[in-house]
Image (cartoon, rainbow, N blue to C red; front, side):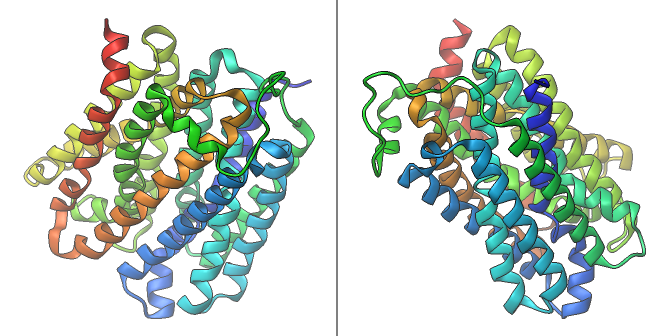
Length: 389
């Protein structure tokens, strides 16, 4: 049996490349379809809405814990690849694009949360560090379409999106072959899975604190990723519509993978709660500083964006590890999926506001994201305070 964690994280990298595949072609879509930048926010939010409804379906129904996680992951990755390919081949405007991106998001609900459950099912004793690798690959998967677009500069935008579909099919094959881990088996005498059982997780104080920290984090994270190309242009680091924007966006988003890996290593020394709190504080500082960096040298602005990209996601795996630890093992999949659904509902608001207002707010749009990490720190306070004693 191969080491399961590398297999799962590579599959996560390939599967989540579907998420922002359309964003990598934003400039081409604006030109070809005659749409505006706010419409790119609508396409992003279509994915988010699909993901939200998908995770709600899996969590409230208990499906995430009724069937093997590996089978759900594989089926959803194949369906997501098909919907993503249909977007590349069939969409010629928003009328087709929005429902197809929604379908991709719904399928991703069986990839991301179920990938987390797979990690816990294989290595529960080091869930924080392993989930850090998993979310690192989610981050790199989010950046991957920008990298593919950079490598294929001058090619058709459809090619970038089709590459993501091929990678998702590889992810399905990897996880189908791996299967589920030996842990997270139902306890003897555990109550039966029933509709809405997941809500009981929120009666646990530690689960609530982790979830509240995660919700604040999510206000910032996906809006930052969606706005990264625009922030690069606003910062004067590249001209709009150039391959340099794709290259820098890949670097700024992709460096989050290193942030996750470092946070996973550090969590084995100081614990997940303190790592999450540190990352929230650092990303909040980046939010606050970016609008004040107008006169900075380009290299200093780039370093600030790289620090922001590294810290904005470094806390994410630790919220999942803390939440998984705080709830009953037989509902881990449902609890993580439900937490994801609320978090991604929050992202829809910040993404829509950010993409709609960035033209008038300019670099000040970063302050729209600032309440997220601040409120996340406040919600997480019981856990990081206890870990500091």
